[in-house]
Image (cartoon, rainbow, N blue to C red; front, side, top):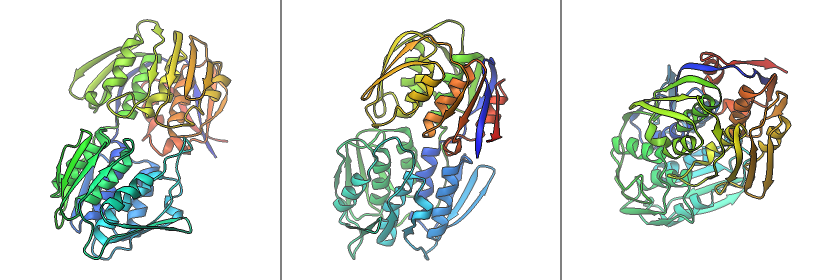
Length: 420
């Protein structure tokens, strides 16, 4: 088994370049199944989830060639629209192939997905959306099967009970080949949804309203190939911003889109972090004054992202005062809190409320990661702690952060992968 060993207390200074967004690259790879044309995607991060999705679409029948962050996909006419359990068991995003396969092949059989243990993320809204487009849904032996009518999917009104990123993306991909107009109501507004819509438009789709809560899609008969660059990973950006706020001299974070981080930057500034937008793709964070506690409530975009909650909790352990962190998106997403307490943090949990009292001196110890963002939280805590921290189960971290140890080592951290 692999683990991360961190010697804490090192000041961070220098440049970090952010990779393409895993959560934008995954639906982009799925979208390649909508066409026989060649889809070329740049800034594809080399992380486990991407490799899993690549193997999945290859298993369906596409050819995938990856070189230096560029992925070329061709999904010809001989597709087998099945996503087996052995390929999807570790990744909830595998449900993103439901919509494209049902739209293009008329049938999709997908194993119920796995992934992080951060709470219930059912695909009910995906299935309700496909029913709204005329599909018949069956479930047996752990698989979901969506079958389109003989003439294909037809446009319809899809009303989400609450905004869902993967649900919106999945239905967007289904609707682009459905006959007539589809309207997605209460749609997710995240930048990753907009990035997918931009790719689909390059492929020939007719989409309006992405980035708002109502998206309109006029179905087309077929889509073609396209070339597209994935947006920067806003969660990776935010993670390094917090690292700089906790330990930075001057940390410059490059290849970013600052506008995607507005709620995170606002809360960090409120807590006393010095953050400068140097240019359109560069953020600078400095650690020049004591941090103060602020309250945070996670919300769907454009609110404070749930994927930054764990990292922000690590930051608040180093802030003076009491911080109330409320998680409204996922239940069971405070599993990092007991591990932070093992390091000396003062944190009380009451349902979806975490109360963090700081500032506390963290002490290095062995901790266990429970999910992707909890892993990042524990790395940040280890960077700030006295002594040695060992983060176990780093396979979670490897699902979503590209070259994290190299990037942090390059700005002064003492962090390495070890065998345990």
